[in-house]
Image (cartoon, rainbow, N blue to C red; front, side, top):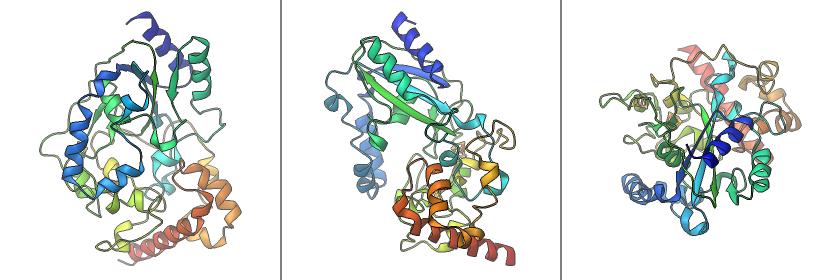
Length: 318
Ligand code: SF4
Ligand code: SF4
């Protein structure tokens, strides 16, 4: 490892990240083809991907960039209340809330870049648009692999969050990932997806995805889907991740406490939403959705909760 890579790596870990890799900007050259393939496989996703940013234009957006620093924050270190499983997406609720001590410190890392004369853009500066295709970048850095359910996995599974910075320095830090690829025969994730959003391996139709529909999708039930398919999900959906053998090793009963989840869990069960004020939801639920829901989305959140409660009754009656 060159000395700049080593310094960046050490600083990333000091700022709370679990992994850090660095790739040359030219490592993105193969992405355009892969991206086009995905759009060909699921043409309807074109509209969606336009909304999440121009994934293929990293080089032209940042013409001065020479390398990309990729950071992984692993959620597996936290525990998750059993009563919230199947209702709230773990990847949303396990992101430490802003200003919490458990949270990774992007600001500190940015100050460090500045103090060391490194021009850097990324982190949360562009919201969900980011600086490019994070999962692909992380895979190129050897930090993990993308599985057939489209999620990025480290050796610890898929419950992680990725960040990236383009920087104006040449350096490289490529790891060796020991996670084996998906078996050709495995389709457990596709079978677990009630809405059939996983239309083919490595492709997903966002407009059929419960995680999208209960957040950015305004709680709608598009033609061809039924309310029952949402099961008891209020915000997010973990079905295709939890069905995966590479996540099953993890026991969510153990780990560090986070975001006061145990304290809040009884109150935010779907059947209790009728008794909750908007102020309560804005203070206690919206900040836990990792920016997937905003205060204005309270009516959609309530609709999700009502559907979840009805589906729980239906499931109980069977
Ligand atoms: S998150 Fe849920 S709905 Fe979306 S692809 Fe996975 S299983 Fe299907
Ligand atoms: S369930 Fe099987 S096919 Fe799907 S991501 Fe996991 S290993 Fe791959």
